[in-house]
Length: 412
Image: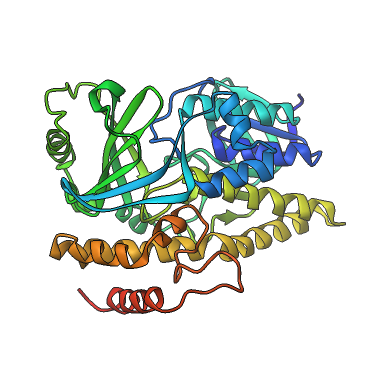
């Protein structure tokens, strides 16, 4: 493969594989390096929203039917329910389905797609060091590689992000919006009545619990901001399991993970290094959804690099142009959604929780299917407008969100 590349991508998950596929298809010389060997297990509820299936079709040419046929998608539901403890607040059927995947299959499928598109892949090898001064990477086996661009797609504990200077990476703000999640897998017969994704409030501070169905199992979990819960996650999870009549099940197999929950970087670009996905904190600050934002940010970064390298630019000019374009696209397509999802999150967990989420029940019933459509990307989190510029939201929705936005600005 040689040791000099146009782009080296650290991390072969959905973000890295999406970037590798796009860049490889564009004819660039690309290398993906991942410390794990695929297929590998990844803790995740595995929910794929409508906006993600649209991206999969747009980028990879893979439809939902294709992915079901390959057993990448193994379950779907067009209904969701939200609870306050064990009391139903709202439940809606939508015109778009939530699809569910097992991450070891999903991630491996995408990595193989990137490989087929021409990306080189090194598995089971970590990155020991990165030298931005000469664009050189040293791997755990002693190999060295150089590239015009480096993409950090290596997750929440990103090695690549460590290269960023302090003025671009606020450690305190990052820690304040880190979340912890706990998950356990339940056999379907133990929760045979659950056929749709369900969220549960008030078991954890600044977060929620969930039960998501797959074909063969139910993924039951809880997650919230670390700083708001400290060492209370396991007791809260036990209470949640008891509320679902699962208290008799052993919790020895509970797995924990850290995920971004509002700590996205406003400038994930440093010299020729771009961060995508969890490495940049790109996850929904309301629901913690990370798969879409991982793949969407990778798509935008890759488009920026391809466009810059097609121009008649020297290397320094191409790096500058790509970085500026990536930031522009983030401000157009990702940051507005993350900002408004964060505003809604803060409103829910600092205002509505005081009234046992009864106002949430009223608001959700007033808004009908619009909140669910916002999760799917059919609508924006901002004002719940349809995601086409000519369509806005009037009447009830505008009134509700004007009130919410005012409250979110007022001191608590």
